Length: 97
Image 1 (cartoon, rainbow, N blue to C red):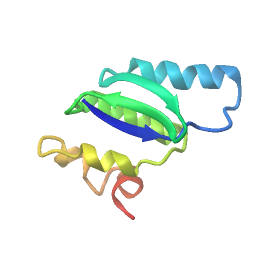
Image 2: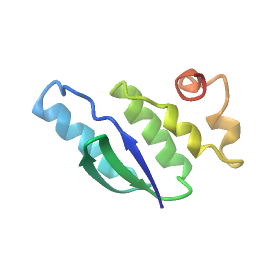
Image 3: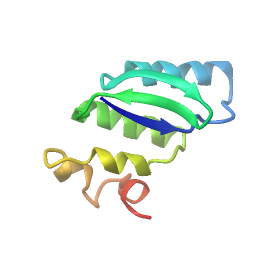
Image 4: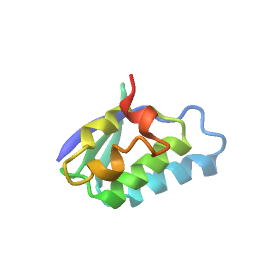
């Protein structure tokens, strides 16, 4: 298991928007637990994170405009071909400083 911290989107646009965010997060197979903390949401993930879960995390963070730099730590030899490809819309958000 690995732990990461992500900032929650603030403000949510509505109660439904907040519900959707947390429902989506809970639905990702690699997400085993999360709890709010002073630095943000502390999320426990499986290690390694499977490809479908990584794609869902990319989608969630993109949709809510959250920092994606920590995703670079999920790069593996197995997912490098698609995940680290410069052709992907998230490449700059994840891999460029």
